[in-house]
Amino acid sequence: MFKRFFSLQWKSFFRSSNFGKSVAIKVIMGFFGIYMLLSLAGTGAGLYFILRELFPNEGPLWVLSQYFIYWILIELFLRYFMQKLPVMDIKPLLATPVKKSTIAHYILGRSGVSFYNFLSLFLFVPFGIVLLFQRYLFLNVFLWIIGIFAITLCINYINLLINKSDKALIVIVTLILGLYGLDYFGVFSAKEFFRPIFHALYAYPVTVLIPIVLGLLTYWVNYKFLRNKIYLDASLKSKTTEAKTSDLAWTRRFGEMGTFLQLDLKMIWRNKRTKSQVFISLLMVFYGLIFYTQDIYSNMMPMLAFLGIFMTGIFLSNFGQFIPAWDSSYYSMMMSQNIPLRKYLESKATLISVTVVAMFLLTIPYVYFGWHALAINFGCALYNLGINIPVILFFGSFNKKRIELDKSPFGNMQGTSATQFLIMLPVLGAPILLFTIMYYAVSLEAAVIFLSVLGVIGFALKNYLLDKITEQYRSKKYGMIAGFKEKNS
Image (cartoon, rainbow, N blue to C red; front, side, top):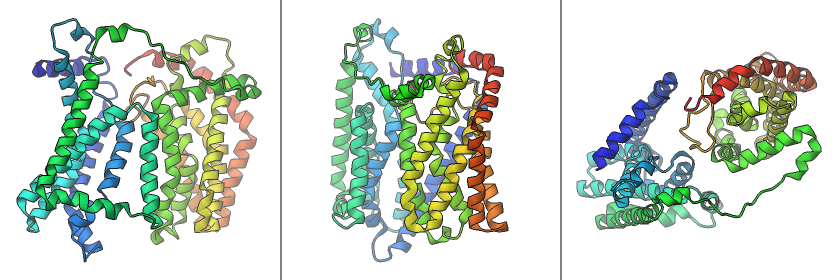
């Protein structure tokens, strides 16, 4: 029966209407996936020697074991956005004499052989092979790898249980930040506490039974949950949950534009793909720590300009590049009404402007690394407000690919076209190039002032630029409507 299910899924994949579309993107993503796997394998092969050099007085496996708790939590966090329950059209099967248990086992089996479950193996298996060459015991290393894979499966099936819960996401993020904070300030060392627990997978091979049993337990819990949901009546019964909504009355003060702001805010909060953009933007505030804490980047001012544009404009880039595709499901309806297109675009610009200001305020603590960091981020924020917002709205007029908001947020290429790749050149490349030229030709102060002045000029010409962009949208109106009507694009 599993063979039959696999055959049906295979035919569904190749016979779908969107097979063959966006072939270039699929090929690029395929090469990216292969590159990532090879990079993981290379990292795993060299990890032993890196750890031995960094910690000459401790065994590499002993050192690695202390970070396993962070690996588990971070992978759970990433899977929350990236992974979803394997989709299978089971409604036709419910009217046939196929056992519900068979369907449930197949769905969970497909999840068990997910691509994400093998990523850790590409890192830890090469590391284990190096351990064997370093005369570690074969049986112990082999069972250690089995234990790692069992932990990965636990992560996989736990994610399937918590994937729809925002509270679970908050708990995971709190644990990551809380444990790291306790470690950093020396209150409680999570690494030292969990190190012997995970190292026991090698030192005491019998402990491999613990992750195996936990993996089987999480599989059984998922099976019981899923089997109880596989009923034809469940898809016909209407939901009777209490609606919890907010009318966002404060947006009314913006007049006609307030209606569009309401729609955008509700869309962002109610859909996982848009909500993920908010979480990613907030997390990217910490991206600068990777560079500001390294002496090698202390004098690389163009790199700091990149950080300024990137951190203050991360939501601008992630959300703005898909305008107006976010509204593709009802865009044709809006264009058939007496709706002012100018106000629609102005609401998008206002929403993005607020996020740029908010992201700049969140980057203010980087002044700890010097006043130049604050000045660069301020100049970059002004540039994003005055120049990059009109630029990204203009490129939005070329978006013709539909976005289904109920789809998985990561690994989802819906709405992606060559426009999304080209738009990064003016949004990221142009300000960094201008900053670099002014910095090396004049000074750091001149470079910051130059970006700031450009931003102020763009902000002063806001109404003029929005009028021109509105005309562009009107000229592309029917092409966008036709493109958004094409599902599976």
